Image: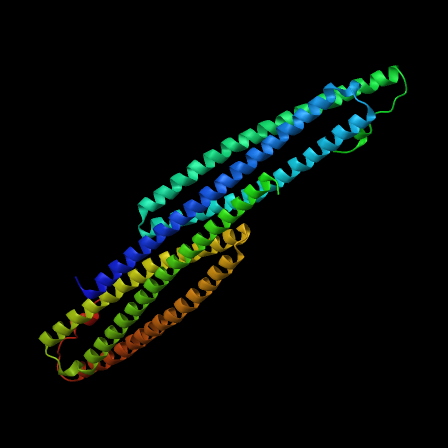
Length: 183
Length: 183
C-alpha cells in the first residue's frame, strides 16, 4: 500500500469517528430538549386542568357566594390564567429548541452517512423518530386539555346566562363584575 | 423560588450544556474535514506539478528520443495523468464532507444561540470562518497548478507542431503516436 493511501484511510477514519461524535452529541441534545418539551407540555396541561377545576367550582357555587368570596375566587382564577399563559410561553420556547435539535440531528445524520459512518447515521435517525413520537403523544395530551377548557368556556357562558336571567327575574342584584372582563 | 421554576432552570442549563457539546463536536468534525480537504488539495497540486514537469521534460527532449524511450516516458505520463485524476476525485470526496461539516456547524451555531449558549455559538462561527479561509487558500494553490497545466498544454501543442513540421521538412518519420490520443 503506497504511503498516500494509508494517509487517506486515516483521514477517512478520523472523519468517520468525528461524525459519530457529532451524531452522539446531537442525539443527547435532542433527548434533553425532548425531555424539557414534554415536561413543559405536561406542566401546561396540568395548569389548564387546574384552571378548568377552579372555573367549574366557581360556576357550581355561583348562587351561594358573597361578593367578597366571589372576588377571592376570581383572584385565584386570574392567577391560574397567568400560570397557564406562562406555561404556554415555556412550551413555545422549548419547542423552538426541540425543532432546532431535530434539524441538527437530521444534518448530523446526513453528514455521518456521507462520511461513511452509516451506523451512526441510522442510530440518530431512529432517535429522531422516537423523539417525534414522544412529543406527539405529549402534544395530544395538551390538545385534550385545550378542548376541555373550550368546553368549560361554553358551559360557563350558558351557566352565567342562566344566572343573569334568574337575577333579572328576582331582584336587581348586579351581574358578577368578573364576567364583564375580556378573557 | 417555586419548584417548577427550579426545574425549568435546570432544563435550560442542561440544554445549553448539550448544545455546547454539539458545537464542540461539530467544530472537531469541521477541523478533521478541513485538514483532510487541504491535504487532498495539496496532494492534487503536487500531482499536477509532477505531470507538468514530466511533460516539459518530454517536450525538451522530443528530438533526441528513440521510439522505445518515447514509449517509456509516455507510460509514465499516462500513469501520472491517472494519479492526477484520482487525486481530483479525492478532493471532491473530501470537499463534500467539508461542505457538510460547515452546514452542520452553522446549524449547531444557530441551535446553541437559541438555547442561550451564545459563547459556544460565537466560537463555532469563528471556527467556520477560519476553516473557510484555510480552504480558500489551498484552493488558490490548486487553481494555480491548473493554470500552469493549461499553459503547458499550449506549449505542448506549439512544440509538437514545430516538431511535426521539422519532420515533414526532413525525412518522413512518423508523428509520435501518443499525440494522436485524446486526452
